Image (cartoon, rainbow over all chains, first blue to last red; front, side, top):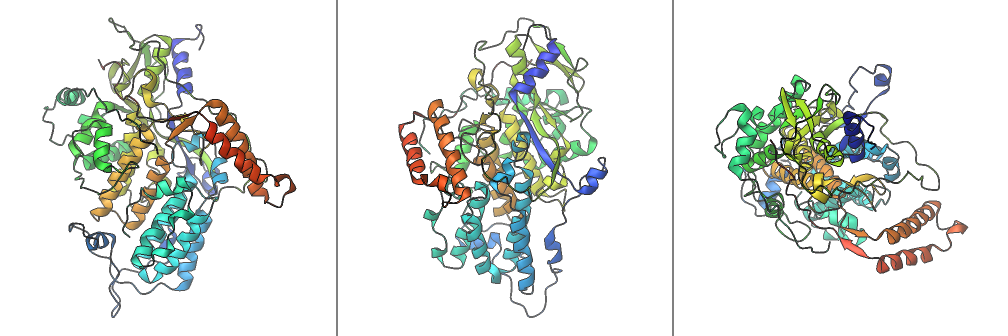
Length: 210
Length: 383
């Protein structure tokens, strides 16, 4: 800053130097580029394509433990919870494969994230959020269709092993693998030693319990 | 992470006084445990659109009625996460009233993205005997190095097209206070009908933008009113509010350039153990896991909130190497990364093992300073 700057200009220069701005990079579609005034369209949830109308189909088994029920089963005190999800018909392989493809397509590499403008990286970058949305749909799917947990574990294992993925994403996959391995009673599925220290320390942040 | 002596937020403004300051403009009482109307916690400037004000108010209402249970989570040192966060933030307990007061101590005004910082909104305030504390102590403002493209093929475009940037949230008050301190004149700001001299980072002026509410960035875009969306925004509020703390070298809890990891070289980390990224991460984690345990967040919402707090945690720098060692390490790491991408068969990478041994040796010989908690006691006082 120079002594000849007006006080206001000095303030603005000081603001530029402090870098306290948290900036998000918005997703936008081609239509937004054509019409800058329009709010960017959101990506429709792909699970909408596979979600079954939650009217219980007759004769189907009850769904596996919900998150809250699992916590209770683990010995935690009973909690007031929302009603358990209604039973759904089994998920067919095509729908499962489609969701896996959506997730894999959505997960960015570290290089792709780092290629974003620096100001887009102060907050969780938009591509990582988009991946989180798809990972969320997968988690929801697996909670609704426990018959897919083995395949879910395979997906999470592969995801956690990808060295080109962000540490946060690898850690979430590793934690899900760990928690599913307990449900499946297959502790050998999750080997902590397979992951670098930065992924392990983040994995530990996620509580146990599926 | 190495254990370091912990320092608590030792000088808490007496709670009753802080509460009185926070709500004096609304003329409410001083009962600490009663839920307060959101407008008694923050004062909204006219530049905040009505819809944004309504949603922030709803978020605060939800914070004021949260019941946080024992989550049985541990922090990196094996301590109970909730109790250690109580200590780290200087709370009496992890309860909604305490958390609301914590925010109210640090955020007093909310301005919109269109609030212009110019000669109409800023002025030189009369000092009335005011002088900056710790005048010669200015926090380090780290500058990110010029971006260096990693050698080798460039990545394909992100799977998600990116076109524009917008503000999510920013702590303007802390930045303005620092700017005034650096030039030794007292800045005043006209906000929400008040003429406010920036005598402390605790003046607490937060700018919000449409990015905070955009469906593409929400935890549950299909349900704008979902609790999970409020929890996400509250986590960001706690992050930004932390910038209102600190004095001298810790003033504003400024971010640092990430020396390693996914954000290496980017000005997007904290070189301390109790800064905005840690505060935001812990609060998001506590709120998210509490929501899950109470069955109030769907699995997909929990999953998305977890990515947010993991991302925040990944930005905490546990230790700092001396500058020379860090520079040498950066060079070796870049070479290793290039070789790994090119494949071991690349003849220029025949010495990959030697590079890795060199990196190990550099780390072993480096002077390492473990990160510690910074003193969060705020500088100055609000007028």
